[in-house]
Length: 346
Image (tube, rainbow, N blue to C red; front, side):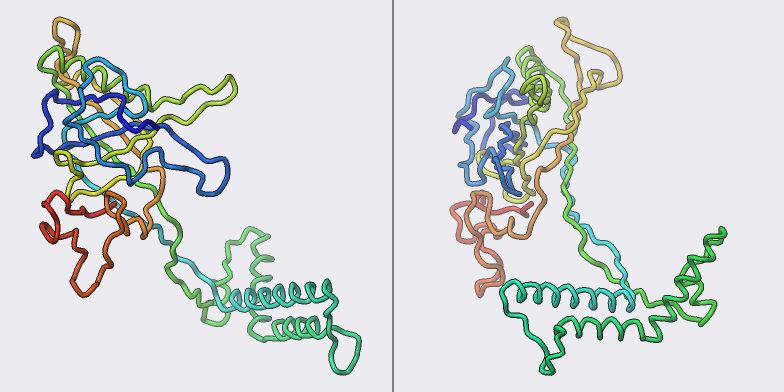
């Protein structure tokens, strides 16, 4: 990735000041390491210095490549939604006993195989010629089989399967309830299941007021379309489209409150060229009103340690320290200006 942007497009086509809030979108190439589980590497480092967009010259008619920057007004539907997946899970007592026995057996057998391989196999004091570990395993299996509750449950399970062969719809618990007035305790518990990836949807309305803005709007739409498209690597393979780094900004600083984004893919884009539901164009054919809808999806899930660093990549102070909450969450607390305040995070 080049260190500097290859160009900048902004709408509306006006200066960005220290009091202007806007959405900055940087384009970069998808980079992937050759091996490893975490093989995706960010095209733009978190610690990269903030862009001073006021010093960049806006391009009126240019389709941007990786390194380019697009500036759009703050969307009207700013929101984030952090979701962690949980699901209910059950394990009755018999299943738990079986799991415990199997784990014990597998552990003992594995250890004994290791001893045999190393020549350290031991025998009981009676020199019966039988390995003590396998005798213990046999004893545990006998205890499990001789358990009256286990045998009764096994009988009920077999009876359920036999009856269902004739088209019945009898469950294991319903048979237990009919025969003994009780069911197996499911020991239900809510367990962490998975992480999730966030999706962000934005809608921008374009109403060009002069030929310069009309050209900028055309360039912005074409830039998004080009960079979200797959790239031909050969007649056999396709390369991953370019990615996008979204940042809420206030002037030349990151926004001091709003949430952050991880690297995003542009998965869906639609443009309505009749923004007011009426076909109307200027003399050069530019639509009077257009609506562009973008759907971004983050490439990586959010983890707890993502909040340990601020926007600049600097480690945050420890939460709960004697001096109270994290200093750079407070406006003007030990900061040069309020623009150094850290936002709500991801």
